[in-house]
Length: 177
Image (cartoon, rainbow, N blue to C red; front, side, top):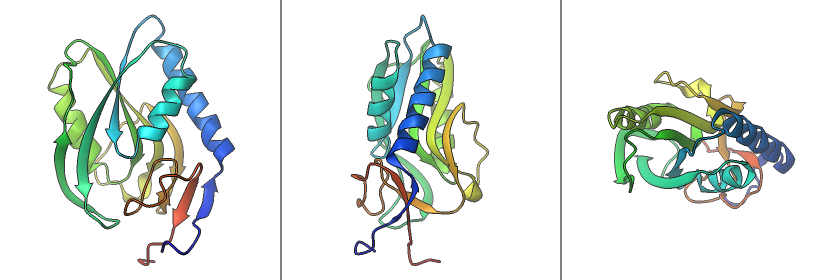
């Protein structure tokens, strides 16, 4: 797999346009407020960094590490919180920033956990929406691009810790096709 160069689905310019659009929408919706953006590591770090640099409102940032993937390309279905929030979200406007939503199991579990902490508002911002594999219904408030059933990498998204460095979003053949 590492010997093949993955096929480009969304160019660097297309990704930049989507990030800028999402940043404008969030900035417009939260003008006069200071939302807390919660990045889900590791995949969202590139997206979140570019998103906040493109926004024109003050924000705060926190990170969590969730895991439902092992070393393969399929979710295990079991969600683990490897590292939780470092601050309280009670009464806060919270926007969860995720690189990709696939089955929806991990993000659904996390959003349920956050709702129980009584935020003033809770929204979800996702760069890549992979609806073909959805098992849990998820409301995405700020959505970038949609893909069907491709296994995507690049722009922070990995496959076995490979390809995060790519500046665009690409399709990897996993050998399961």
